[in-house]
Image 1 (tube, one colour):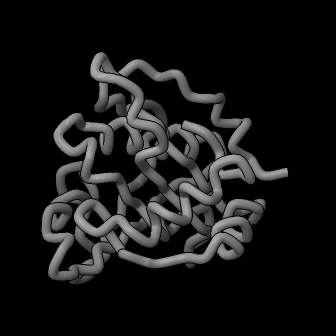
Image 2: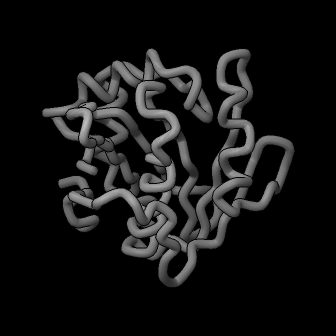
Image 3: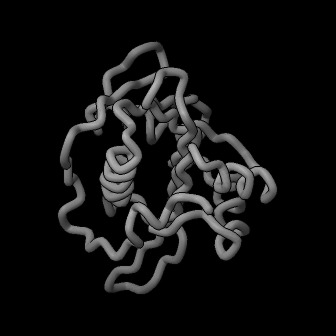
Amino acid sequence: MRRVDEKNTQRVTQLTNKTNQFNLTTRRYTEAQVRQLADESSAWAAAFQLSDRMGDCGLIGVIFCRLGEEPASWEIDTWLMSCRVLGRQMERFMFDRLMEAARGRGIREVVGSYVPTPKNSLVRGHYDDLGFTQAEKFRYRLAVPEKGPLTATHIKNKSVAVKELVPG
């Protein structure tokens, strides 16, 4: 996991514009919009890489969070992952880092949306699988636990420290 910065903005932008199957909102962004979101001090923008015994897959996932409507809440603006790494439970690793970052920033609730498209039905139950509660038709809420959960125990974390993901 790395913060979204000038080194990976181009690839992050490419993923936001081409990823369909594992993309919860299918929002599309320009490089300038990605940079702006990554530079927001109240936002959290993380890029995820994956390497395994078969080789380095490179940057394969992105989560953007913005301050939510409620105090101490984040709204998941974008959560996507390349279809090349489906089935490896990388989404659980991403979830673990999201919860860790939320706790580190004093966030008490995370809200996510699923915007159905003809191509993303694969992620229809994503938030349910992670323990979120459906609040509205395609909107889900999760209280950030005080510690844990650790849902991706088979993935080794070589992430930068969460505090290094703060813009500035």
